[in-house]
Image (cartoon, rainbow, N blue to C red; front, side, top):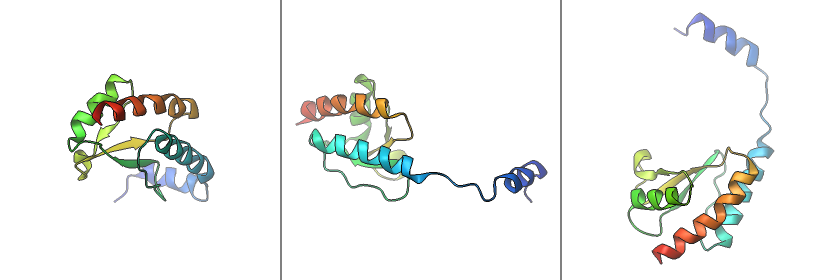
Amino acid sequence: NAPALMQRVIARVQGMKVDVEIYRRKRDLLCDGLASVGYAVKKPEGAFYLFLKAPIGDDVAFARALQKQRILTVPGSGFGGPGYIRIAYCVDDDTIRNAIAGFGEVLKEFK
């Protein structure tokens, strides 16, 4: 059974809508930015994150290299996707823009 508190919360939020255009714009900003520095990107169609193929086979090492650029991602192996990293784009636009150069530097490092 659902707790009484959650039942009241659900009753209040029914009918609320989320402006998905905000997430679509952030997704496009990230995907276009990653493509501009050399990554092959497949745009997700229904999430606030994407999986990006690591330029090396080791998704953990790739995530650590990005961390040195002050970019926080999660190795895909934690989500059943080894060889990929998970990038959330539910952040402000400047955070996305500022991360692109770091993604480019890490890609150069592994090529």
